[in-house]
Length: 341
Image (cartoon, rainbow, N blue to C red; front, side):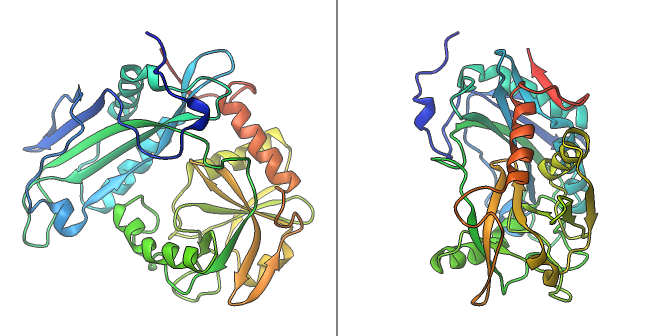
């Protein structure tokens, strides 16, 4: 089979229908065997739990073509584990970890011609998700669920190179203490939509959310973990029970320590400490690291040493090393790369 006739170097970061997606249904206490289908539509009751009470969770990961022509995924087992944690918190049945990884493999195999070639800057984005599918009018968990996984080729998150962004301190709260900030639930992202639209309208790229209880500690943005660099090149990331455990952030901490020989620390980060850091980045699947050039605190600006024109040297090394691992240019730790054969 030949690659699809797509202008790989000019596709955006958006949805493109592909040939197959994976579907499995949960009913009477168990999951069916699952199947690949060409049907991209979802038919559910108007009273489905996902529509009435937002009982839905999701994940995001990518498939790549490596420098030697292999097609691989990056740490899908961790996405499976995080989805299990999300399901438990929303009283949903867990989709078994081995079946999750198998669904990833089957979906990529079935859409192999949509995996962009090495060097194009594009990747195949995978979106596993699960939702309550049967009719629920009382406030309670659904009894039937659907797990689905589709994929879409996407271009690089940053067209024209990675440039530092400007963010603001948000007056909104992202997650309540003991709430759902630590899981990948759709409702968390719905809550962030007004805040991000408002930020964009005010000329900012993103929001920095502080802890809801005291508004003194750094948490994350609407969809990415923070990473800071100290004057002596120590890597510091915020620690909180309300922060989503980013797979990219966890991987970058290993890269910093084991590949670059840097000291790493995960701890509570007070907002008053932020001006002392020399670099700041946002960690996520889409962009790996987005450098932050400036934080606006209600008109007062905090500017990092790298400024608003280029990525800082430590964050650049972290990004280059992790993408090198993903693309097969640098040897990966055991278990990080899942080859699709």
